[in-house]
Length: 222
Image (cartoon, rainbow, N blue to C red):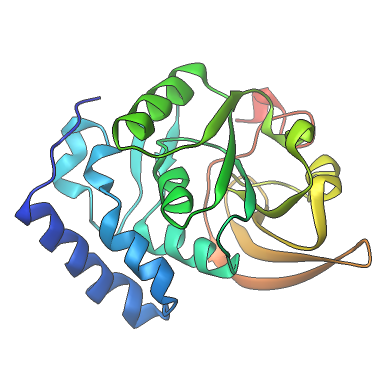
């Protein structure tokens, strides 16, 4: 991956993204909007797609994975109601863009990625940009118990159900955002842990790549 340096053009692209894609769709958290103005999305996409870095669409990043469209990243981030120093578990590091947004919001980021090449690439980019995130190569459906409980959990792949390991690692009164459904279409779902029980709220329809793992989809179904 080629790191495309930031300049006036890219800053204008970020401003346009915020003004045309995020604010009109209800992204109104000022801290979230500020993070999207600062994080250099063009650094996280493959060079052949850099001209579309701020387009209103997902982009392939290899291994059958994608970097989600900016609006979906913003929506999931806003739904988490993040506070400074929140401990956040991210399932699916992917390009590292969501990790950077979380780090820009002063969260402690713990991210799990299934594919070593994506995890290593994301780690290199995050370090180059000065963001701190702990990244682990593993089955994300099982979470990262060592650093639990987490105030917030964000799952960036589609699951057939809420992985019990992730829910167990969610702190009481914590929030999880996760796409739930089949392998082709899902509902972005907000989960709150209230007195040990999952209280869910449907946010919108969505489409993510499948969450493969012990508590997700089987390998051959991907």
